[in-house]
Length: 337
Image 1 (cartoon, rainbow, N blue to C red):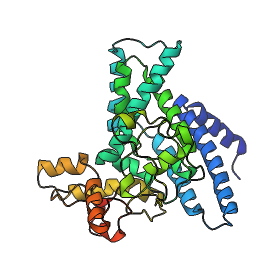
Image 2 (cartoon, helix red, strand yellow):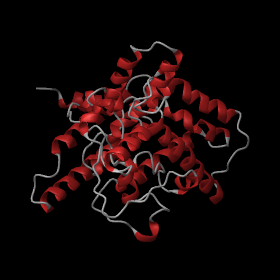
Image 3 (cartoon, one colour):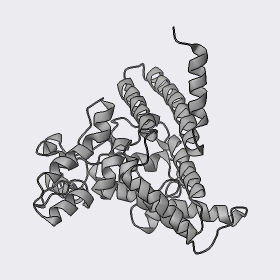
Image 4 (cartoon, rainbow, N blue to C red):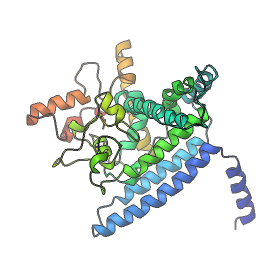
């Protein structure tokens, strides 16, 4: 039998090595698993069972176990550059925002929301970032499990670089990470279809209704509602789309992810990108496959969001609805959500 005292000592030593961010991830992760399991039990009980995808739930748990493994590895090349870049910007900051004032916290909230908007928008419009972000959209049901189905390849894609300019504006890297974490905590509760539209809050805050639209595979709902807690920047930059009454939403990727293998889901788009890069014959194709919109192809026949809407217009007379699955049989690069 294992030595209980030795196991306890090893666990204690491992926990002692965790920094603040890692502790936050552990606590939030365990809390999310518990609350999400409770939601699954409630949905199954309310609907007489059989409708909650418990296989997907456990796949999400395994994805997060992979995240624990990845977080134990040294920083990736891209993230290893972006974090020092943020620190360098803070050293050369234009001014220092005093966090012992109310206006400092208000400024941090709005600047974090601004940079999160562009990070999230890039996560859908730039394939390099979509390769990581698609994991979050891979579930075919919309529930709290979707909230913590997150990428394990963030150290490769290096999304934190979007927040580096916030350090130039006078916020310390630690404050930026904390603010970003709180932004994500808010988003947990909006991953549900059990809450109807919330009246005056719609169009102002990121609500379950607004985020249902964001997770939809319907082409009229693609690439919208990027805000974390508020819809301010979606309104300013023309990406806010309200939920339409009577429209049945199909959740997940436009080409549904049918695998329950955690590592396959996490690496699906990276592998697809790798296959496309093997066909590259020009700098334009190289750039397009890496940084073009998901679905881009050199011949212009790829199923980008605009192409999907045009084809649905031709098929149904309206740029709306869910594309037929046979559209995607020709190639994996058509994946998107």
